[in-house]
Image 1 (cartoon, one colour):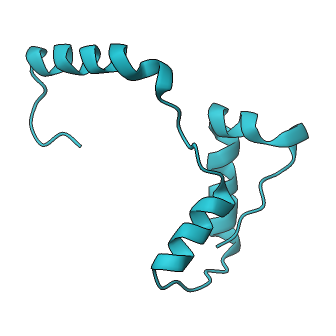
Image 2 (image 1 turned 180 degrees about the horizontal axis):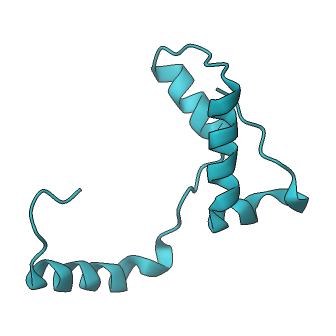
Image 3 (image 1 turned 90 degrees about the vertical axis):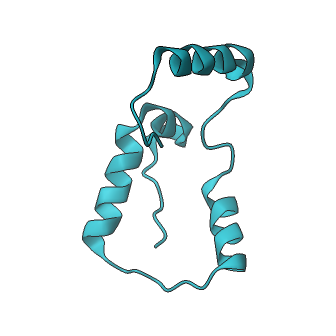
Length: 81
């Protein structure tokens, strides 16, 4: 998160870091059940059973190209909340 305006030096530094590490950077390396288990084992939680919320989450997944590609045979995501 930026807390001040990015300077040209900042941008050069970030581009240099990206160039070195871009081939090993992948979003969402953990699958949903792994993330769910991690949080459930470390933090208190409660079930949030709201149809509108589930639809919003499903839409976010389907609208995101990377997430959408991970769905097998265009199966809708199984939202747990």
